[in-house]
Length: 135
Image (cartoon, rainbow, N blue to C red; front, side, top):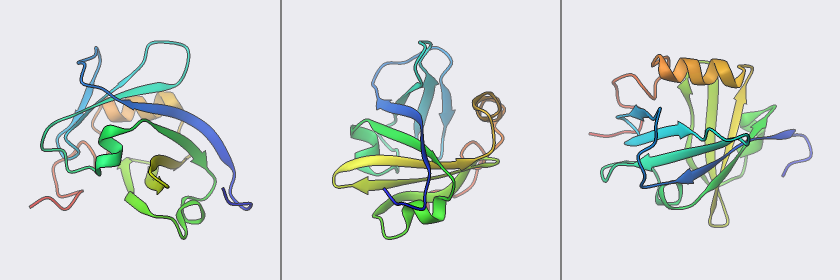
């Protein structure tokens, strides 16, 4: 952790093979995402066989932190995804922290706004295109 970056826990993400109610699909990521209905901030991620995401993201749980500067948080780190804007106004990068994926988020959006935008397809993750360099 860097002294000039603030880190606030945002969620924990868990890979899963189980289909869950309310999943949102991203064709580009080959990933279904669902919020856990419990009281803690947990997301479930289910991946297709063709998902282009890094193996660490697809196989291991991750912690996600909201940071005040994404650029500073990832400086000098082994970045395995991003930085990119999967949802309009929501900037993300995932690093390899010695074999563990860790997500950093920079946004002013509330969790409700983030999920509403994801459900509405408001972001590069949910639009057609070439976000992850697929041919």
